[in-house]
Amino acid sequence: MPIKVLLADDSDEMRSAIRRILEEERRIEVVGEAATFAKTVQMVGDLKPEVLLLDLHMAEKRDFRPELVKAQLGCVRTLAVSFANDDEARELAKSYGAVTLLDKMKLFAEMIPSIMQCQSDRIDLTRRTAVNRTRAA
Image (cartoon, rainbow, N blue to C red; front, side):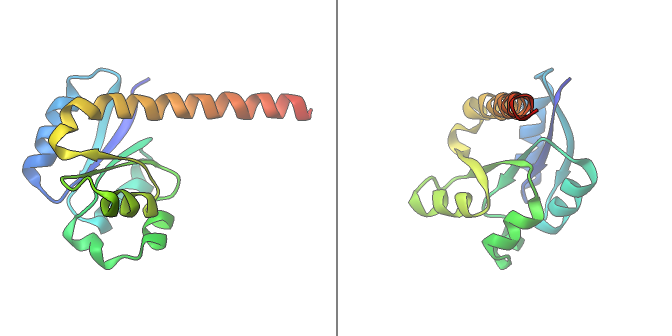
């Protein structure tokens, strides 16, 4: 079953390029695209993606406080994407609940392995939860 991914970037060109790359990977299904943070939040709720590729610096998003962003995105595994890959960007990504920050300059080399790692982490967590339930019973 493919990993469901939502793309969120305010650049039409960037979303299109990312989509083309991801559509070549049969283990990944792009379930939607959002150009604004408000649309991203709506689509996370509606589409229930497993992974969100989130442009860290979408213009509209700057008006949101990190704790609200984290709460609105729920438990979706978020991969932040940015041209800035410095301490400030890493801290911002972390405050939004992102599991990692991907450099847009290296995005096409890092993106698929990072998405697949999210899937592996989810499977490991599911297994640990099942083991803990078995031990508790």
